[in-house]
Image (tube, rainbow, N blue to C red):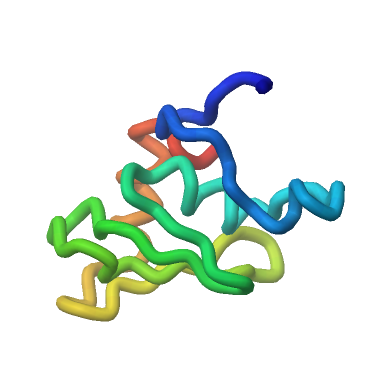
Length: 89
């Protein structure tokens, strides 16, 4: 198996089964501890409020889109924290 991603878990994705590259949104989902990817949507713990499975990660035109569905944490602040922790380049 190749190197593990930042989250320490191997990617378990349909993209690897068919030989395609994982999207930036999927990579981010797997980089965040506890993140899971389901078809076109990732769910994981929000790095701001800490609520489990409250952060949604979707494909965006230029970068992953993040939304905290529980407390409405700022998407800009989420991205800032995610970048600071090295989960997103």
